[in-house]
Amino acid sequence: MMSALLPTRKLYWADPFRTQFTARVVACEPGDRPAVILNRTLFYPLGGGQPHDTGRLGGAAVVDVQARDEQIVHYVEHLPDMEREITGEIDWPRRWDHMQQHSGQHLLSASFLARLERPTIGFHLSAETVTIDLPGLPPDRAQVDDVLGCAAAIIAENRPITSYLVPQDAIASVPLRKAPTVTGPVRVVEIQNFDWSACGGTHVSSTAAIGAITITRLEKRGDSTRVYFVCGDRAAADHRRRLRVTQTLTEQLTTGLDELPAAFERMREENDRSQKSLRQLEAQLTAAEAVRLWNEASPIGEYRLVCDLLPTGDPAALRRLHASLLALEGCIAILGAPGNPSRWAAGRSAGIDLDLRRLVPIARGLHGVQGGGSADLIQGSIADAAHLPLLLETLRTALGESLDARTGS
Image 1 (spheres, rainbow, N blue to C red):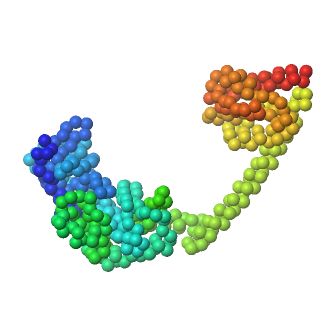
Image 2: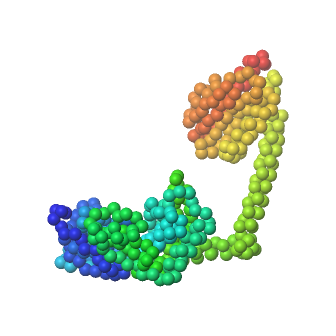
Image 3: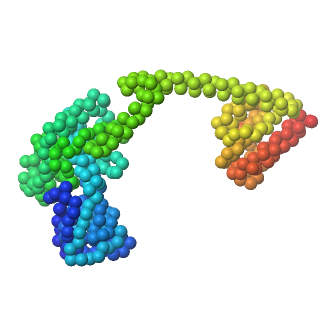
């Protein structure tokens, strides 16, 4: 029974830099998620915002590690050979990354509190992102620079980062950044004379090992702010990536780094002007196309019945042409645009006493046709573009017969 097992000894607390160990198997759990419980382990379990370690245990890959009561459960791809002593090895690059990010989070959170009186209310660490949440609106650029300057100074001083257990009756004497949520002895991680945090995670041994902290993004989330950041090796990789991007941009735009924002703004303004000119040209071309179709349509009394299949499946182009046609006097327009799905629309100019809703059942009687609308405009879709010409011709015939009857042709 799990309750009969002794607590798993946490070797990662004593030496987070250690990568290999031996231990005795005290329990196995076969099944779809085979698991092993040891008397001691270097594998850190998921918790406190820090992901679990991975690695190998007796030749089997460790894919997940969870704390369950006072035991640490190692989920493995398959149960290893159960010897009296089993050897384990953690994935060191993953552990080192987590140590840098987690220690950097402690330093960054303490810096936000020291410089802006903004406590951390959330922390998340994954393979892709590291974030903390702060109450209130995002800080401005000067405030961010102040916080990062504070953290950089602590890194440069190479202050020791230590951990120790404090009895529950003595914890009030420790200036913890946040009250602990556990009962009993509290593990404190201290950045010398700067930050004291109740934490069970793995950490580097000094602030210099954090390397650097870079805030990459601030995101307003309701009444709080999410701060995206990277530390150490991740910060170095992020710097190299951004350097490659800025070097490419400065070369292509033949400008200096400091002039990039102004160059980008000029490009944005030029693009806005180009887009405005393009929209004006599109409107002129659409209006000219509408007049052409109207002139080519055979008169039916005082009306012109336009029926046309657009060459492209752009729904916006269909809407623009339809609007231009209906702006002409005495026009009834039926248009289709192939696509996935294909679109169709039928409408009439203002002042024409014709209820197009009676055409909806006719259209929907064809295979795959959906649609509806009002007295002056109906529209919808058809699943198979190959049937679009038949739909347009069916609607044109129905409208033509209706107009012929009205004009007495």
